Amino acid sequence: MAKASTSGKKKTPVKKTNTPAAMDDAFALKSLQDALDKKKRFKPTKDQLLHFYEQMLLIRRFEEKAGQLYGLGLIGGFCHLYIGQEAVAIGLQSALDNDTDSVITGYRDHGHMLAYGIDPNVIMAELTGRAAGISKGKGGSMHMFSTEHKFYGGHGIVGAQVALGGGLALAHQYNEDGGLCLAYFGDGAANQGQVYETMNMAALWKLPMVFVVENNQYAMGTAVRRSSAETEFYRRGAAFRIPGMKVNGMDVLEVRQAAEIAFKHVREGNGPVLMECETYRYRGHSMSDPAKYRTREEVQDQREKNDPIERAKADLMKLKVKEDALKDIDKAIRATVAEAADFAEKSPEPEPSELYTDVLVEEY
Ligand SMILES: Cc1ncc(C[n+]2csc(CCOP(=O)(O)OP(=O)(O)O)c2C)c(N)n1
Ligand SMILES: [Mg+2]
Image 1: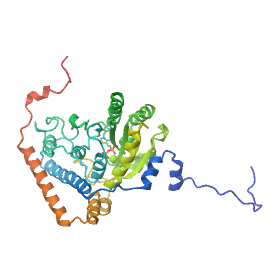
Image 2: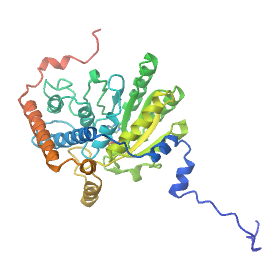
Image 3: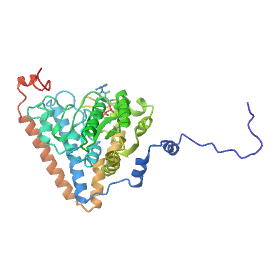
Image 4: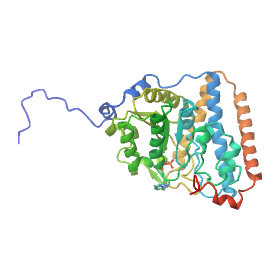
């Protein structure tokens, strides 16, 4: 073994490879991240920002009402609320071309439906299992679809929607319709094998697809750092040469900016993008989760310092929107949501014969 040098010769400085900056440099596929870092936030008009604010608030109030209806026993089965994550769906949705693009997600799907501007009445009717619901009351919270809007659900099998999203992206490419597929999944789903099979195919075939990890820090009761060897999810496409982006999912304007960069890249035929939106869910995994795996203080801290709706409100104030105008918006949204609950409660349940319909696409 060579002896350590005592000759006083200058040593080559050892490069630290485990600092965040060095690790980021080591991630080569960051051209889109660099573009985002140059300009982090979308510059909206006052009307655009008001619209984002309204949409996020509608999701928040709708979900609060759904939580109440669940407590009253009016919603059966599972119910996963999106409260805290509103900026992700709204920021991305606002940059989509609704005539061509498709969206697919997991079971935490009410917010994504509302982001499309789909009538809250039919979403609430679905949650409460009524015939007027968007899936005729037969899908419930986790299985909402609107093919008319190119929204393909609403899936209960963790990660399965990603592979289906690959199929939707292939259809866009095959039909040359110019559309892209936005496939949302969670930090927990990001550890599913089929996600990586899809990444491989999507990159190989240059499919028009954006993989969006909604990293809300938990998969049921398991914190990201306890389940994931690589917690920087945006890097997980590196093995397939998919560029990654890490985005503040609590800031609707940053999400929108990131969406523009990612969508442009995909639409130009460069293949898929992997976007990680860092976010936080305020409620338990589902309505039946008492969330004992984290402290109240942790949740309170996020609510107080990082809330996406409060952030948008502060931005609106800077654009000279008056607090009274925002209060009026809240009032109108509360009325819309109350009406949706009323509509749902008054709607009839599906006929028993509906058990036999929509099971197969065609008879055989
Ligand atoms: C294949 C499969 N495995 C396990 C489950 C049970 N399960 C439902 S949700 C969930 C956690 C998923 O967490 P994440 O992907 O982070 O999404 P989030 O709920 O945080 O939005 C698990 C394990 C399932 N539905 N499907
Ligand atoms: Mg999660």
